[in-house]
Image (tube, rainbow, N blue to C red; front, side):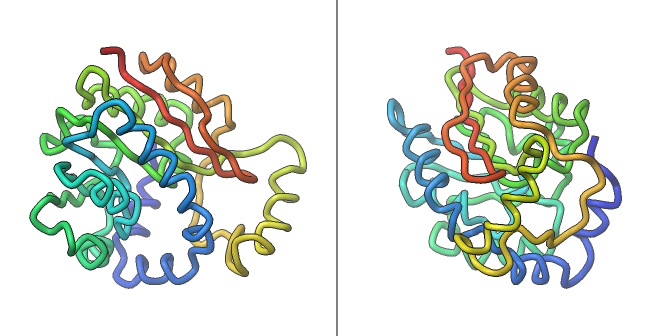
Length: 224
């Protein structure tokens, strides 16, 4: 499952600002945000988008901008991030509901039900393997038939590849990229761990849609 120390860290005053200032990945993630946004609305525009671990709300904002009829549910464990997200999502203020809560308690969040899309970005690596499987089961349970689950997250590459990627990532994504900005208490899942956990959650229509270095975009669809 998630570690209580992770939730405690994100709940500390000022921690969200510290993380956002140290985040070196946001510019590079604009491409997978755009890929995911296009894929989930290619056949039918989503009406309800749930973003788990939404942080400052940038991923959710991309979908709300692309689909003007969609409504969003922002979910994060950090009250400070709630304030930052309100600034990011101000243009969509009448279309967003905010829930401060732990991603491990997703199944109990009534506001998240009947989602056309469930997003999560840089959240799942905070779970151990049983926690990852439970998270995907809970997320799949929130989706309407034909709904989409989107994960954008870091993985643990084999051998020395994690070190190699982190060594060169600042060349492409700025000086802070690849440098841990917050604590991690479990080993990161592998690339295949995510696909296996998605399949175990019943989301067999899944694929790796994008990858750069140790960051992957998974997109899975619930059977109609």
